[in-house]
Length: 460
Ligand SMILES: C[S@@+](CC[C@H](N)C(=O)[O-])C[C@H]1O[C@@H](n2cnc3c(N)ncnc32)[C@H](O)[C@@H]1O
Ligand code: SF4
Image (cartoon, rainbow, N blue to C red; front, side):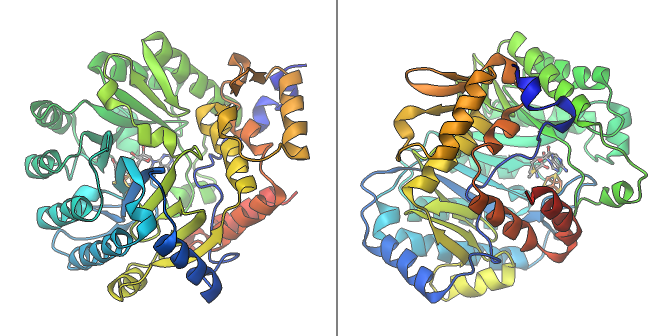
């Protein structure tokens, strides 16, 4: 009995679990009762130094990259919406900064993501970064990351980030293969890359980049070239992203019209394993399923990226559309910038939906995100007795050699590399599958077609 018996390679699951449990306007719209209970918890409960990660979402970009499925807003450099956004997020910070629970959190890892945070004009970027320092205690922060891209990274915004405590800068390079760069219409040139790398080096920032696999027509050799280039350049943290051309990615229409084909599941799995082997053999260490770090550059490790997936930490998420889990509530903020700003400027919370998270759900989360993204679940985190589903799944996975049961943790075996999302899916309950479907259904209209496709797949 082997892992392949459980999950034939052509059916291995690749959809990552990022938010768990999801929360959505379809199944968890914010009603007065939940708003009041969540707000009351924040105002009265003592977090008692509970560890936390903090996420801040900036939903703007200069252009919409051909492949990108993120729900972003393309804005001109001088668009007043960015000032309105900064005003609103400062009000949101002020709201949390005044809550007993948020004040009692020990924030240790920060991530400013998007979109492209450096699309913000320098003055607004400075206000947002300064606002974090003014409203939260950042004295225990270890890693503080900001996402940039090469077109919006400038000496001046790098200086601002450096001055205000950012110690990790990550950007998407995607591929070095000229044919694929042309196909994806990637703008930055090799010269731009070289210039930005020297700007980063001048400030002592390690190189942290995203590259993509399972691209249309990308061969094993193309992918090896990108992995080798990362290794040769000494990239300290390599984030590997599996391509998914779904709405609102501009290239999606070619997929819908049958003009573009992505690699099969089996091919993508082979490319994933190729990356894992190449990076580990070159001395990189596993941080998450998609993030590998050079062992000799510990400052490039995103601990945020790990604790995102553990019940040991709350996640305070700020900004339009951000999803967090704090004070035992999972929530999503208003996605629409105008609606978000209206609520923020009224001085109250900016949630559009929320649901209470029980110990049982935190435990389910530990199994799903722990096994999916980190390939392990520490037993010390488990808060409730194992459910019949958890017991059956553990037994099945252990018998098939997919999981190891050690005194301290459940851990994926080497044979299970690449099967992590299939394994994680075993621990997803029907209730959370339903909530995930609700999440897809609550996405903006341009994503609806994809949601109905997913709905069919997700229905048992
Ligand atoms: C949210 S973006 C933010 C980073 C920044 N805006 C940039 O472009 O460098 C993070 C990464 O997601 C990845 N990504 C975007 N669209 C994707 C897609 N359709 N499939 C897989 N990965 C994708 C890219 O590697 C990108 O660098
Ligand atoms: S890849 Fe980055 S820069 Fe490009 S559209 Fe997506 S978030 Fe924006």
